Length: 374
Image (cartoon, rainbow, N blue to C red):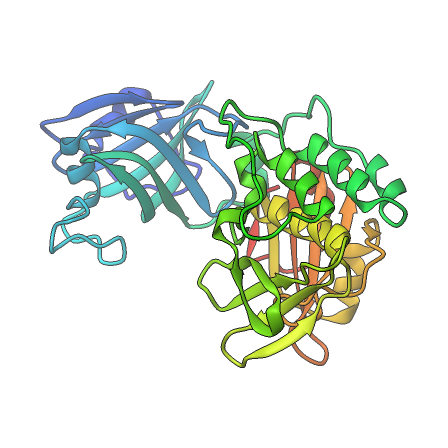
């Protein structure tokens, strides 16, 4: 190593000294938001302080995101082998160079720590992106310097709550309009096939036509031509991503009951809300898991759970059936949260934010976070 002593987080180097850490035979490329230098000894990534989606840089105290594309040579030299090679593995990182992470500050290149490959996206032999663990984890003070929080232009408000009881279909439309923008993609009409489409589901499909994500990322609502007859003559119209359960409805009803069908235990349980309310619950959950910014803790006490939900508005629903008949939703402007009971006195909590700044108040509560993007 050309540096006289081992690097420590918060060390500051001139740009040329940071780049020389890569060693001889260096290749340099510019990624979106970062300079990447790959040499015989190491990979050096120098990024600008930023708070944007889709740009390389620090994501939270534990993760760094790199956005390409990177041609095969840079990808192979950074992680050792491309996917498809019998030697390739994110876990073992065989042949991978050491990765040094820096932030470009006015006083020089601020050393963040080592980058450990966690996952990546490849297509046609090109590395499109990679997620790296930052070792050691950044302190809050350092995170504020290298990923300063910017204020949002606007946040989705909670006006849709006014219709949640009397007109959940209208509430769904208002919620979706605030949280999920239309895209250029058009899924076309969702036409009846073997069964008529209940009115609440027809409204949902109209919203999903230019919002494909509304059909699900974790669980899915399927198109009418994919529906099938299930238990007791009910129609299967949705499913879990790994096929462990289906959702079914009674085609004879206008706002039909929705049934949760556990395919492992063959258990059939009616959801607490009819189709109109269920679709709002489904959309709320899918918007939460599809968001960019998260706070997650898998094991909170009742007291800690009360603390993280104190400033949030509880949804006036009985618990959602998935995953264990205990999931309760909470909302705030630009935020959706869910609490699930994991044991007699323990709860998991996850929150998703429309904008990173919305999570900041949760970070001040002193609870243990497994992931925190604020």
